[in-house]
Length: 149
Image (cartoon, rainbow, N blue to C red; front, side, top):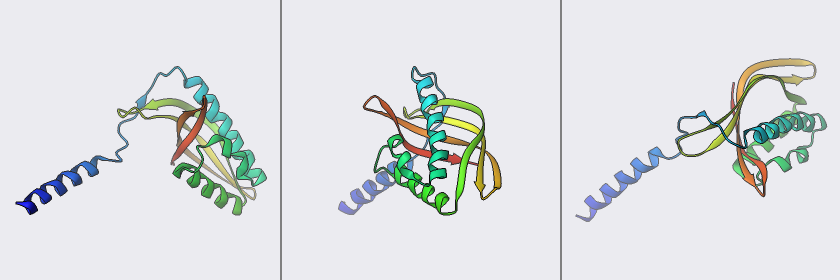
């Protein structure tokens, strides 16, 4: 009897865990803070380019929730780009959209043309960046960034 209960418990646990981490369906959102979020993201993208030109991630730290997975991921990305002397910038913004999913998570999606310039050799890519923001002490902070190219 005990092994049967344990097998049932394990099966239920596996079913529950398989549903975790699901991103959900993202849809356009109409939020009161959409303009401020958009302004914050545009400012962030300009600071990202400048920080790569100066090869200093310290310019970026005020934009992040410190010591999160997203912070460390972007710091590594910055180190890799700086080491290869690559400047990453947004050449053209085609659309900025506030989105949310059924779990109440919010993000800003920026679709456009992104350029990586490495010693005069430019690589242009069309894609979307997803900025997952949180309000912290009445300021927006980045929790994570997703890239789709």
